[in-house]
Picture: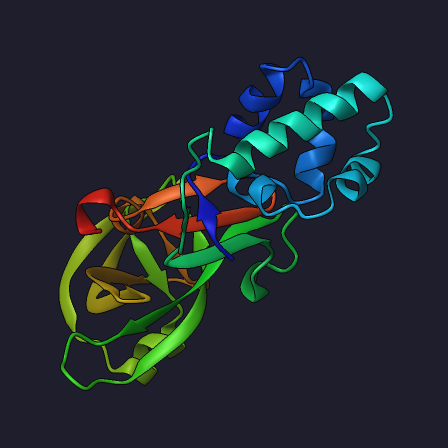
Length: 212
């Protein structure tokens, strides 16, 4: 999967210029969520039938719009390869939760060189600034305790041990401090190292502009 910087918002504004924004939702549902994808359309009549564009004047406008894209008269951002792709789901430890969470697969390892690397599903917790790992993963990786902190929960205060680890998505590695928990999660301490695009189906993890 690739991410296009224009996104569905640019598709909406492009359609709106020609008073065709009424078709936006249907077009996005069919997967045409960037102007780049419109440029790849080969059978325009089939596309219009799929979107259920039946008004002759609207069909003519769509044909002209797509032809302009193909002629290069509209600047189209190139698609970007994401570092990672997440989605809404219920991770196993939280399978009985009422709602789904944003989750994604990432690797974690000990800071020691040539250490074992494990891929796990992490829940995204934007309300937290910590990384959590299940106790068995901490034990398998042999993570070392670096310090003890006081954790203030909703109903209690507890002493928690922090472990040193490395979080990795594709070729980006981040030194992290990990706390034991019954589920794996990452907070803003990790998320701030990336750019993000999130909608009701998918979560793209993108390289920061200065890293390109």
